[in-house]
Amino acid sequence: MNIKGLAKKLDLSITTVSRALGGYSDVSEKTRERVKKFADKYKYTPNPYASTLASGNTKTVGYVLPIYGENTSTLNQGNFFLFISGMSEELLSESIQLQILFAKSEREELTAYEKLITEHKIKNIVLQNIKTNDKRIEILNNYNINFVAWGKTKEKRNYSWVDLDNDNAIKIIINYLIKKNHSHIAYINISEKYNFANERKSSFLKNLKLNNIKFNPNYYASVKLEEPEKSFEVIKKMLKKNKKISAIICSTEFSALSAIKACNHLNYKIGKDISIITFDGALVKDLSSPPITAVSFPVKELGKRAINILLNKGKSKNESDNYLAKTEIIERGSVHIVS
Image 1 (tube, rainbow, N blue to C red):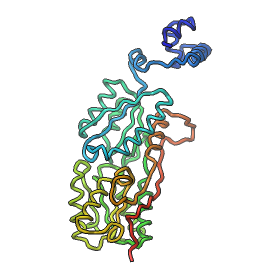
Image 2 (cartoon, rainbow, N blue to C red; image 1 turned 60 degrees about the vertical axis):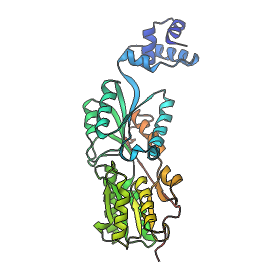
Image 3 (cartoon, rainbow, N blue to C red; image 1 turned 180 degrees about the vertical axis):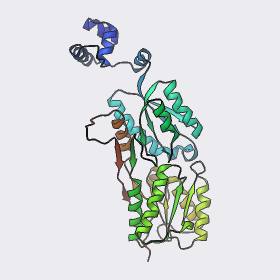
Image 4 (tube, one colour; image 1 turned 45 degrees about the horizontal axis):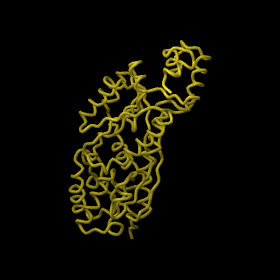
């Protein structure tokens, strides 16, 4: 059934049917209900592309997937695809399409968002990899775009977001390591310009202090997201210079794989001579050798929540426009007890 056939059965104009299905107020509620009833009966679904041409806008949700730095490898895009899967399930239930553009650099990312807005006429966007100070948020606000962010900036501004509780995740990791008698704990981060990395560093420092462990700057390093291959050299050098390190916290899966490589290079047996713990994903869950103990969090659920917030599904007056996901430790034998 197309809109022309539906209009004929209803004895209405195509314009009236289109506006009734679009929920326009210039069509009476009685007519809207009648049109909806017939549309359901004949299983009519509006063509999103035709709607775009007619209105100049689209209900499509836009998303830019970064494929540079660590994300050059499709193996490291597992969390992105889980997030997209969660978004897609919610969008499918609403018959809304997802428009994905790819970006090979930060500059291309900014261009991609401009393209989604100005060329594709998209009014709903999901952001990811939020920086401590993020130019994209200013761009979307200037264009009056409805958006939700996967992550948050350092300054809590008035926008919607979903995120992992990074502060609590590091607290859980530190407490877990301390219970296994670790006190010489190293941390391998990515650039703190990404706010999740900044939050995790802050929590690391805070929880060391809470447990009366003095921060050793030689036990901390950050590697640019664009240069993941440097993690191996950084970790190898750190371990060679600091023999007392008994545990390494890795902020990303790539740095966890680099830690495995560095430990193997130095003939350290993981889970016996040295411990490694990271944030979970396909690389360390299914492909690393040995498997690495990690904190797990519901990435797919984050994607679903992002779309629910974006579309205001089921929102009540007291419901928050933010969602903070909790985490738990998945033990896989890479953390030992210090005797």
